[in-house]
Length: 533
Figure 1 (tube, rainbow, N blue to C red):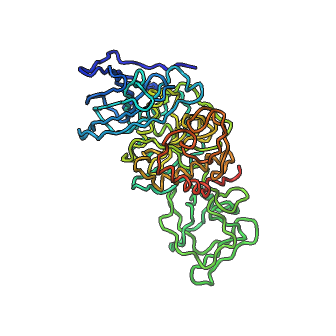
Figure 2: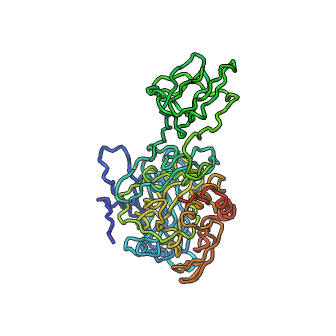
Figure 3: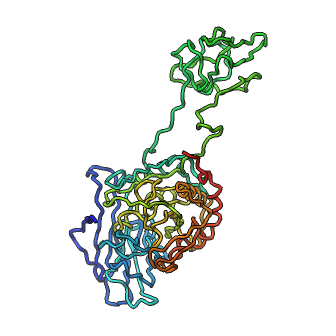
């Protein structure tokens, strides 16, 4: 397996009176030049040294800027039991937060990725917002008689919104039919993105797909009377004469036998349709005004005339054999390029499953006080933490959802592909992982927009593999998870919580209790019954 190269700061700083060593670990720049205005994400660490085997403390210490923090240790197989608490100083406010707990429920993948020498044990990362100082205390508890070896604080600066965009070999291009509309209106008043690969508020990126141009009819009336009648739905091209019979596929050009019988007063002047297949020999006495080239008609349509065409063509093409519009192919998904993934961090290519049998729902813990404009930065911070701190190849989750209902692409490899993630130890080989930004164990409540987004995303992802989002599935545990032994059969819901497969509080009490509602919404989702291709 290729090894990742990291760079250590030339100077190692020993903080006076603390016994704490500060080390800076920075990811590659992904080929960005020195003049590039973007700032890539960076990881900074503080080694927690000390003489007390059961306790480590760090007094208030100034640091480089960071927004996400966790603790890590040398041996990933050492499941630390105890408590770790931190408090931070806001970079703008200059005030210190209260003590906050770090969660321990993260486990390295049950594959070669989790066995690599660079892999470390770690807490879940905690989003604290822009901060420039930290205080910490770690105490061994339970069966633990000592804190883990090589214990350190890991602090992540997620960089700016352009950091690492589209660089490197990760292959995370956000493709996979990320089209459609948001699942629901934001429940918090924040603005969620409405297009595929679209950019959330605060991210300066272009959408991955351009909007479609409306088709223009190829015919226009020969005369433009002074009195205007209802404008056609599409702008006619003024450079062509009606020398051919209008086709039935043009939005407002009926066949000769179906010539509109527009009835401007008096009724005696109503035209009749020609009976031959040649060009029309009689035009209506009043036609829509001819717009100037490249302009759309300036007036809005007026109420329809009393006599309608007997067979009006549809306003746009419909799927073959269908009389109603098809559901969108997929929910809107913000691509890795658009949330600013630094692809230079990702060295190894993604691996794929045979099928996706289940979706595991997670929460990122941390805070619910984030702005949705910060969601992309949170995801960038988690990517850097999972790679630089945990030592994994890429971000662990397949998807993220924020409280505004915006969906973000997670691990690279294609949103519509069965990419193997690192999110639910023992069951990564069968499933996709969806993580909701925020803490839903300590009082947080998932918004309606977030629950609908998880439901739609899960229905779509499972639907790609013919899986019912309201069914159950039996899977074989690939490791000892604290809930199941290796090789034990686990019968779970196809949309389950992390705690259903692994011994953890994730996805938090309130999100877990919302899973029955989410499963029902997934079963009723427009993405649950996708049309045949």
